[in-house]
Image 1 (cartoon, one colour):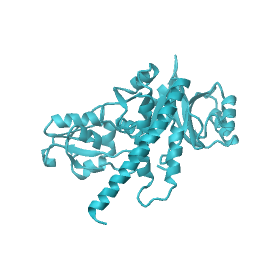
Image 2: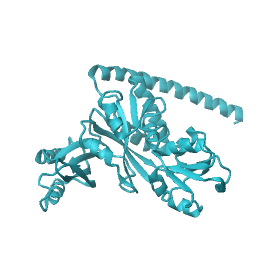
Image 3: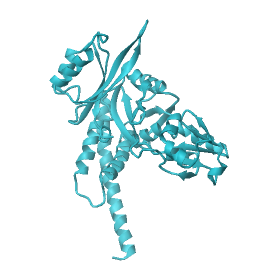
Image 4: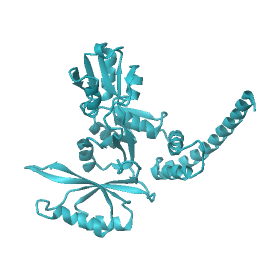
Length: 360
């Protein structure tokens, strides 16, 4: 087959894909009208995950699981915007890793609101300025994000989905040579995640200036001719800052777990995770936490995360616990746990469990 014939065949296939996408979106549009009438949620993470997992089981010489997910996440985003355009608030600024996580899930067509802090993301969703909020929950090398835990524990919003994002740092600068760099901008955590690169390139004596975000670092380095930024690829691209070195993080397993918050709850998917905050009565007494853990064991509930968090009281501090475990709140054995500990457990959400975090 000649080149022109192959191109003509590709054009015919593209035309067929286009027609099929139109048919799919027409059906989505009708479903959307029904959901709006019944006030049901447009975003159904469990349904999207079922579609991706079903297609991933099909045989293909060219489409792996990541490729299928990338294609269909964009289709899902277009479908949601067709049904009902909704805003997404995220921890900014533009070009931050949270922005990248939000776009990975909601696509390029969604309308995004960059917020200055995590509290503002929650407020935007609570006040209906946005339908969804995206905030970081934990990093596998730096631990939990305290503000996110505290706000979840005190908000009626629920976690409806999680996003696992590999974190790759770039070293970006307008300088042609390392010797010309006098300052490096980045977030304090990012400096700590790139120690080996800084030492191996003898940059430890250069001024390291911590800023609010890696996106801000890229913006400052663009304006400061004798500087560099440790930032994300998306931030470097956004501010037209050339990348000198890529993937400079100490660990290639560096990941951040983000969560999507909203004002609705998910149906069961068969592959769920539930998050709670436990404020145990009589925690100062010996064995109180052990008693809760025994309840989990007796009811056959598998814990995947437990982390303590200080709680400020009127006169002192006490401690609560952020806990993740497998299953959905509507599962019978988990309902029994909530009934038994109803005054001590705050349900934070049940949502589709994403692969790649517990095995970090």
